[in-house]
Length: 190
Picture 1 (tube, one colour):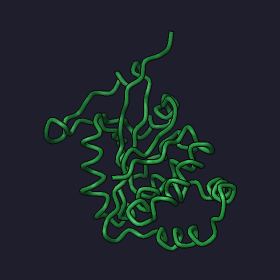
Picture 2 (cartoon, helix red, strand yellow; picture 1 turned 135 degrees about the vertical axis):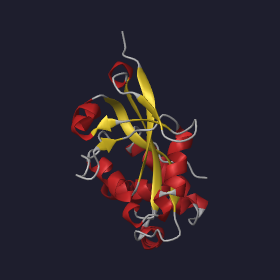
Picture 3 (tube, one colour; picture 1 turned 90 degrees about the vertical axis):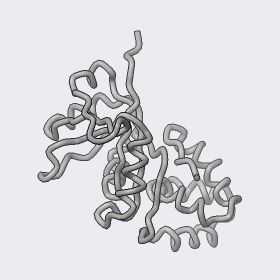
Picture 4 (cartoon, rainbow, N blue to C red; picture 1 turned 180 degrees about the horizontal axis):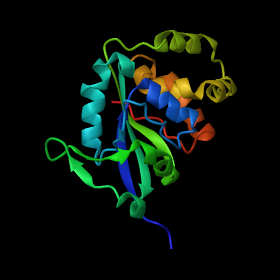
């Protein structure tokens, strides 16, 4: 019998998302000493609110907020009490930092970006990178090679580029991405 799992969400900034990708999108990084609690949230609306309203204005977040989604074994999650930290949508779990490694072992599948929000000061070289792409990509093979080499940058910036790049380039990326990384869906554009 398959274990049941529960969807959880977590708003993260650029550095934390890069660390997640360094772990092949399967684990959250250890907490810093000033972060004694890891708090996944229980609904996308709350993750979206933090990513959009807080991370995009925060230099430490790189002026970008990613609302991530992941599944965790439901039986394991039951040990953590639900906390309501504001209104009825502000529901989260408090996982002590020392339990995060074990928590990561109960993640089923991948941590994916569901939505991304970019603040006024976000850059991360994303625009320069996009213009280089447009100049050098001649075929799907070129795109596939680039995706294999630069997959993290592409994943982190795809939604940002959707606001600026010609649709045909994005469609080419999306088509090749689905072949190269079928387990890691590109974030939705909005």
